[in-house]
Image 1: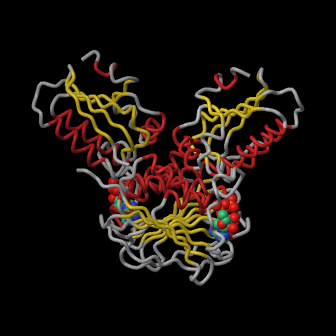
Image 2 (image 1 turned 90 degrees about the vertical axis):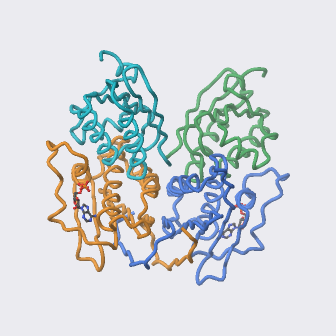
Image 3 (image 1 turned 60 degrees about the vertical axis):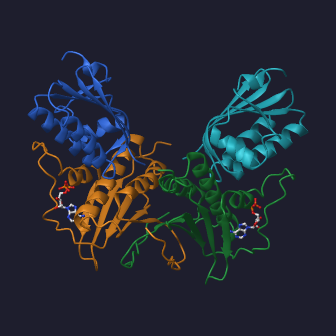
Length: 114
Length: 114
Length: 152
Length: 152
Ligand SMILES: Nc1ncnc2c1ncn2[C@@H]1O[C@H](COP(=O)(O)OP(=O)(O)O)[C@@H](O)[C@H]1O
Ligand SMILES: Nc1ncnc2c1ncn2[C@@H]1O[C@H](COP(=O)(O)OP(=O)(O)O)[C@@H](O)[C@H]1O
């Protein structure tokens, strides 16, 4: 039960699409893929992470996203999350992090206004 | 994890819609609901069972359907199964019963030509 | 069911198996299926084969409930999954009436009647099926299937 | 992992709990979640609450892997679920470094950093959380939640 990670260049920067469960077993892979994005040099305005395929996320997933946000801030990029499922949204709310992240209904919305 | 059972009158007789897992835990309920249908007296041409919502079926579910077929035959009715998921179809094939039952792609197809 | 004390024993140094014990009530069959499926997928089997293996184990558990325990719903069923290199190995242990291997004959499929399919499924799905009644009480059923070759 | 012998012991007369033992490798977290979720639903909790309870147990297991076993992936984690009348009772047992209850403090959520959320989730989701380090080896964590009232 691994997570599937797709990384894509988009107009505003990078799009990471996650599918599966992001837990202690799979979040190191997610972390690695996001680290690759930051190695691709400057020019990107945003990192968009599409979570529509993520049914389950635990604190290791949250930690990965918090770290991604910190790295985005260092590089003057925005981190935008898109299409959280109700159960993932619940985890963000439990962690009181819903207001820290920019969350969009759809990945396409997350690419607008940059 | 109970099965949801809906029983409905339709033009050609009765429609039973099953949703959930049909296993040793839930098949007695399915059996009971089908028995109710046979108590409703003559006039029905067919019993259509919609399996589109059934992800899992074991031999107790198969046994329930075989019994339903035998009861249909006694009452001069047809038993028609509709919309088997791939995994349920695999169970029928494993049991070599695909050819014994009349199986239709959709519940609506199963109501035609009677 | 009312609450009871937990007895958890120390185990030896390396834990290499997954062990699940449930009461012999049919409502726990779903729990066994739910725990087993991801283990089979993780071992490299395709979804459709995994579903068949889950079916076979479910049938074996139903047989334990009906035949070994005669419908008693508060007796232990223990599933153990082992991970040898090339095979997927499942053991089911009960402490009820011993299975009589000569009785456990899959039925003739030409004979369309309710029942008699369980043992047929078990033998059709697994490569190797053994009912060991030499254990102290009950039966130890071992079911094994060779893992698919992975092309990497 | 290589295959090992199975040791299955006789149990006493009534089996009223569900017990699952897995190796302390993160790949088995999914198995624990899969087995636990239907038990919680079956007990009458709503899906969203069930998902949160599963999350909390998953966090407790992650903590066992990281803190009690220091990342060692072949040590036992045993989950026991009991079904007293009004509560849903989960026990997690490890045989590693004992948890220091004074260290297990959920972090201040205002401090946005990776980590430190696990114990916060556990305490937010369950009504009653107890780390018992008086056991022979390791820690016995008990998490309990009152079942929702059913209107029938
Ligand atoms: N675990 C078991 N313990 C004792 N007897 C068993 C067990 N499993 C199967 N049997 C015997 O094998 C027969 C065939 O089993 P099965 O194919 O599952 O069909 P059914 O249970 O519907 O008869 C059973 O009727 C029973 O006599
Ligand atoms: N099972 C455990 N055994 C030992 N120490 C633990 C255990 N669970 C939690 N702890 C301690 O509590 C702290 C807080 O845990 P947690 O909230 O999950 O955040 P994190 O593990 O990310 O630090 C840990 O850093 C650790 O010191």
